[in-house]
Amino acid sequence: MSEATKNKDKLKTVALRKDTWIVELPEELCESEGFAKGTLASLTFKNGAINGSYIKPSDEIESFLDKVVEEEKEYFEEMKKIGD
Image (tube, rainbow, N blue to C red; front, side):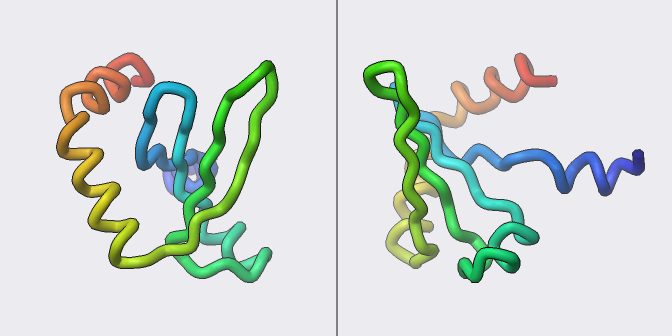
């Protein structure tokens, strides 16, 4: 399997807070499901279940996520090390 193919199969974690994981949907999925490129999925773990919803891309959300990533930069770097 080529490196490009491997990377296409990875989910990009945008934010992780307590019980909620926000990931960017792969471009291929957005195209096949009719979502805008950059659509996010919010997965919340509660009472032994996972609740999910999608978040349409917007400038306000982009700004918020940039802020969260910057605030939690050390945490994300540590998570990346663990994942590698």
